Length: 264
Image 1 (tube, rainbow, N blue to C red):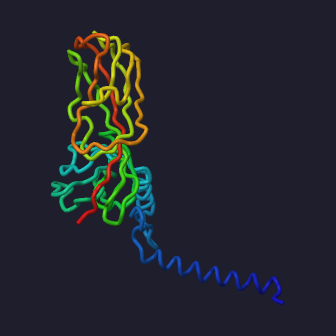
Image 2 (image 1 turned 90 degrees about the horizontal axis):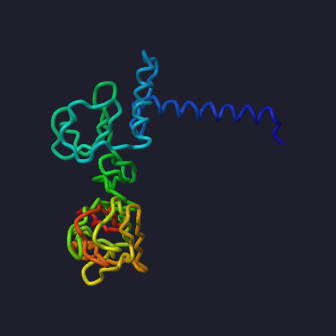
Image 3 (image 1 turned 135 degrees about the vertical axis):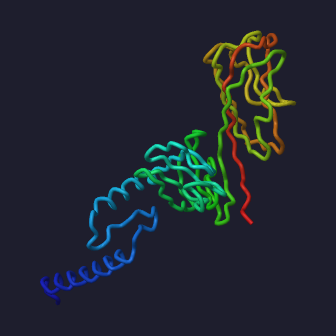
């Protein structure tokens, strides 16, 4: 039976050896594998510079907020901490950095290669995005190794209601989309009608009927089974109890899924 003291001694030797191996592996690295954070090197002077640079990158990459996607020209007056997805044939300070993330840090640009599955928020569209290995996809849920994905998205517009028996939002439902439903809210009172129907050609109330015309009235039109549209389709607001008189604004959103193709 092994005594406690020899066991503790062996454990310490094992931990010391493991620690040496770990430290040796760190000495051979200059950046971390995931976020490319710079590592402090042995006997390095001004270690705080490296540590601060790592913290700045971590601050930008741990919760990615993209100020622009597919951009090819650096902004003229970037703000500290701004992060951009760099598009093809980038110019200026971004030349030869196509496909990378450009972070403005300490008065200059730092570049990081994103990895498949990274998620973030796109500021200009106000939507969640996922990196599929080649581009940032809005609403991306799952992707294969070659980018085939299952995508959920919502698109919203503020529609100024026209005159007549109906008012159409042209090509609001995009081709090859699987629609779950339509939601909407009256922003300013719609005149001329007593209520509103929401639908498409051939089914004017598919997504709702009896919707009030006063400001604040809302609609939540769900389909029992998601419906696929194979071509761009107008969303139509139909007046009941009279014709629209050209006043009022209706905010409407379509909620749908898409299947993206694998890359060649």
